[in-house]
Amino acid sequence: MRAYDWMVDFTPQKEWIDGQGLFLMLAFFFSELGAGLYLVSLLSGFWTGCIVGWGVSVVLGGLFHILYLGKPGRAWRAISRPIGSGLSRGLVFMSVFAIGGLIQIMPSLPFISSLPWESQNLVLTMIMIPLCILVIIHGFMMMSVTAAIPFWNSGILPLFSVSSGIWIGTQLGIGVGLMLGNSGILSSMETWTRWGFCLYAVLLLFYLWNENHASLAARESYKNLVKGHLSALFYFGGITVGLIIPAGITIYFFASRSTPDNYVLVFLRLICAISGDLAFRYCILKAGRYNPLISSNRVVKK
Image (cartoon, rainbow, N blue to C red; front, top):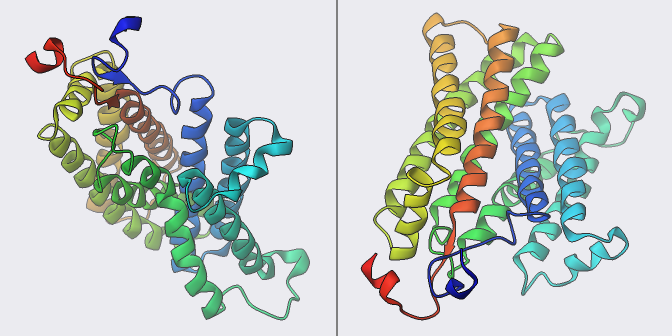
């Protein structure tokens, strides 16, 4: 856009999606993906899945958070303002999740299995379930309270992030279970997959419908998503790869009443789920437009 249109027309948000801002999107994604895998594995008693989920969330998610913040030696200061900063609260949630998760999964590690507590300890489980949910929602929660960008200012986004964590987390869980030959966990994870996918698709469509009937800025963002320069990525990367192909594979497993033991289909669905969710997240972030600070004829005409 032209420099003199800044905050006069609907202005794109760039800090969280362009340049170094891409690291923040990936930090949110991997944190939520790992916490989602940890949650469904915890509820299924699949401790290897918990270990992998902890590693994805803490190691990969933490790495991208540090890359976004820059200067690792000073990045820890971002955690010091949890009351006034959504990012700081997210880092607090992640830090507590990292410590609590490590305590819980340690007895499941073969080289330190002689600890005086067990992974399935009820107290640890009751602590980790809400911590997983807080880590899953913290990215979209931070976006949803950004009133200056109406396209993000929606209570549907945190719910969408929970469905995303469950949907993609179960794909990773099935992949890990299949590689380990753990056939017992596959059926349980596939049940989570079906419900997670249905909730994911419904919330996404409801969110888009809602934004198309919201404020001028939200409708402008929506129009940019479905008709503008983001439409190719949205329809191919998001709708086709992220929804249609996984839906077909999921329906096939359901109709054949078989466990998801086909390596090709399982890993195709996993790749499509991850790629599609990243496409949706990028599109939602990139399409976000600030409300103009002042009225203009261009805005009024729209």
